[in-house]
Image (cartoon, rainbow, N blue to C red):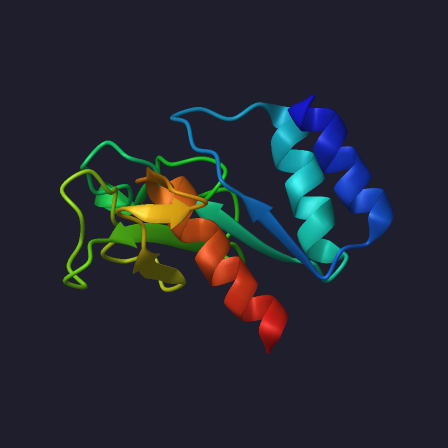
Length: 129
């Protein structure tokens, strides 16, 4: 379903694509599709993940899809005191890493925490501008 969704996103020529997913590996087709989406002019925003680790050590980025391409805006999670959460992955050298509220994000009395909650906040702000 995920690869089908990427194909649809490419065909629909979106302005912005939110990817609230993260993993340590990437498959070639996913990388190909996301690069094509970026090449089409779509802004891609992706979660950095929730493993409390730096994802860009030793000139190697290890959070996917956030690390597929430098054009992707990678998102980590902040707590309610505007500090990096204890669970959020983070980047020290990736120029386009941003951080947004990702702890206790509540919608209709259901609260959740994670970079998957921080990523849509960034995406929504991009869409608004």
